[in-house]
Length: 469
Image (tube, rainbow, N blue to C red):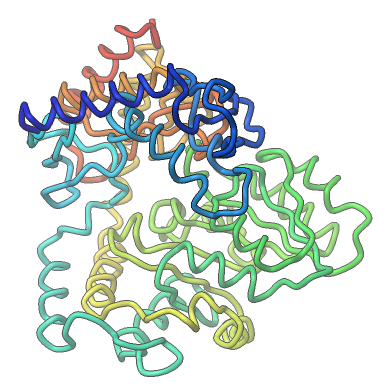
């Protein structure tokens, strides 16, 4: 950013702070306890309006509800907060523009300084097998562009089902060892479409407390009775299912996306059998990673046939886009008509589908990629563990570096960025309040020297802020 731009931004921030002190514009009367925030009426005398508090006293939760009759009434107080929060509060660290492939070293634009930071060690992108930028995948994408053009230009139930699309569904069913598979435009839409398409009012859905937002949204849309059991706690799941005689669906994740721990699947399967509940496992972060053939955590435990519905994404290990549901043929036939997030969305673009097919082919042909990923994950766990870094319950390639400082995590993230590490800060609402962390994603493509350099920088910065010994 130029000097003039910096001056303009600082001036705007200063102006906002002056407004907050003298109370001459709408403030926001809410604390940090998550209760409803109230935008003062325009008729309220200026000297009676509560001032905006300090920047760190607010987050998105304070702007979820507002009084009044105008849906836009929340926007002005939110905008005032955002003017400071974006840069001074650290929120600019989300959605930083990447100017390179999501490889192990990346180029990141820094909007706060207008600098381009090159050669950053990338622990932010999923890309667990390093496939998104493999030459074979890029070539398959380019060939598909020349043959099919850029997009499908239609819903998969109408004109959007290209031959590549059908082939991907067939190959995913074969890979998962299931009768059928259904392809969705995103992993999010797969969960939303499956859950709301299958369950109805009066049914019961019980999901792990840390289930992904797409699972929660699918539960809401289904209008079924929804309950949550304590994270990875089969005993609590048993209590939540007890006494319900209708249709029941239990939902867990293979690897939990913000904690990196693995579902206690054998015990959960036993509870589901006891209560006659169907079981859905979301293997977004474990498909192509766990199990002798890379099918996921269900295969890892030898429970592939005990899980009723298998769901996953193509954006993690395959480095592409999309989601899938695999299971009995009758389930797939049914969801074709009732999974609205698929029916009323455009089909995956043919170039993306072609890239996924090639990435799937490589993942199946090169099991050494999984071996390399696990070697790298174990090595990084060792480096962080020796330094006393708190990684919570993580046992996977998803490593949670626990900070537990919602106000301070952005400053730590900014220092890491400036020192050469690109890693995402995570705080409420993605995780619970006071459970902020960095989510580290390890790739098979990382070299030992990159892991060592990245760990050294992270440990040094954490020590600076007293977050590890």
